[in-house]
Image (cartoon, rainbow, N blue to C red; front, side, top):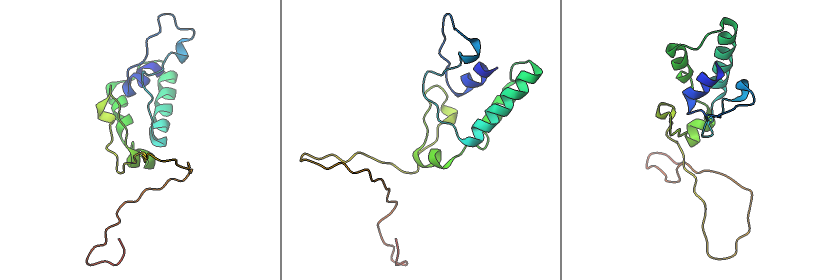
Length: 123
């Protein structure tokens, strides 16, 4: 059941001789899911295990509902195998490049807009 759910988020790696069928559900690419998606996956896997059946397409489609988390909304998500789960990023962060010696600082921030509007004092 878990392999069917994992395959819905991305193509599952196919092991020729898996050591354990329960752990043979690793996707080919890292998939970041929101807490709401994680709870939905757990609930669906639990229900399928109790009922001893494979998931229906309608049940898998519900995993897309309420999928947003702050980190996914800010930085986006791209799944090559499942483009329905892609989310455009709200912000972009790029590396700072320089040609002279630089001191590395562990500081991170993002500026949204530094331009002042004619009608507002603050940006």
